[in-house]
Figure 1: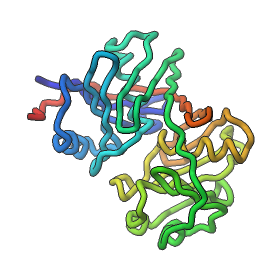
Figure 2: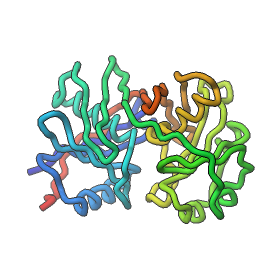
Figure 3: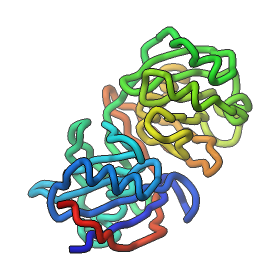
Figure 4: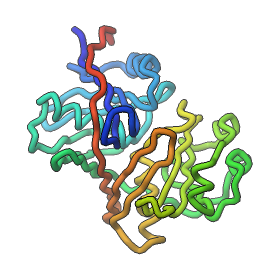
Length: 266
C-alpha cells in the first residue's frame, strides 16, 4: 500500500525558506533499517515517520545516516501535515510519543508551538580540534545533552563562519551550536548549527538546538520570551519561551510536496 509522503518547510513563512523535512505516514510501525533507507533516499536533514495510536502518534526521526533522539523542525512539519490533511482536527493538539518522551504541538492560526524538554548547557572544556575547526575565539563553551555550544564575539562572526566539517565530524557530540547576541535585525540571538557527525554539515533551522539556546540566552538576557534567528543560507526564525525544564518553540510551516512512497517496509 502506498504511504503518504510530504515535504514541509518548517520555521518558514513561505516555500523554500526555513528547514525542509520529509514526513512519512505509516499504517503500522516499520523496521528501523527501512526507515533509515528512506531517509537516505530523501537526503534531507530529517525524515519523520509517524504511525497512529489511540491517544496520538508514534514519531521517529532520521537523518540521511542515523536516527536522532530529538528534532524540532520535523516535529513541527509532522504536526502541520496532520492538521493540513485533516487527520487531526484543527483545534486538537498533536500528541507525539518519541525517544525524548511525550511531545505536544498546538496551533493558533498559522503559528505552531512545540512543547519540548529544555537541554541547558553546562560549562565545559572544548574537546581537541573543536575550536580550530571553527576558527574563532570562543567567549564561552558549554555542553548540552546533545551538542556543544560555543558563544562567539558577535553576530558577524557567526554569520561568516566557514568551519572545517571533516574536523567537526570527529567531535564526540551530535552537533555544534555557534551563537551570539543579536545584531539589531529583530532577533535577540543568532545561531548556526553544524552536525557532520550525524550526516548534516549545516542544518538550516534546528528546533532542538533552541532547546539549548533558549535557556542559555534566557539566563544571560534575563527574559524568558525571546526570538532566535538561525543564520544559515536559508535562514529561519524560532520564537522561544523558557519555562523551567521545558521550552516552547514557535514557528510556521509550508507544504511544498505531496506524494506517495511506494517502497514496502516488509
